[in-house]
Image (cartoon, rainbow, N blue to C red; front, side, top):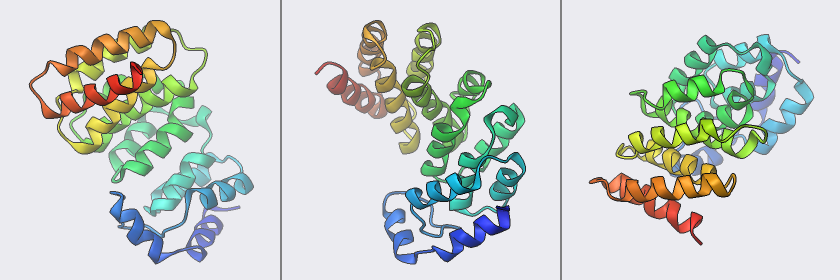
Length: 216
């Protein structure tokens, strides 16, 4: 299927009622059709992987087409430049997280970009850094502990960022690292306790929520 075919399929499934509901959950309604992720995934299974199709889908600017692009892209052909370009285009938390969950963690540049983005100024780029860490913690089964121990330092550095979409991703990354194994759980709990002492409402929330899950 071509990108035009896939976009036509998405447009045929447009649901304005869903768009209004998505907006209530903080999803940017601009360029959004209201197609469910389940439907997008079904289209992706039929489309297969194609780097060129993914590029066209992303360039369309359509919310659901960009999520579809993260599913049909070939991870082996993704470059750092492409990851940076897509990250700068993020304008909604769900596209950011879908890109990290479906694609970015599978590339050879995941840790490099996570490190860079964790210190970015843009809200959604910085969120992507921590969403990517969370995805690596959950999905990269064979990774050593050392990168995650380093990531705990990035989490502490970002814990005072009061922006909603950043603090939630920082919290997510902290919790996922802590759930990998007993050693990282101890490290994540120690980091959360240090974060709890910071003079920041965001930091206190991140710590309290993480400790509630990691110590139960």
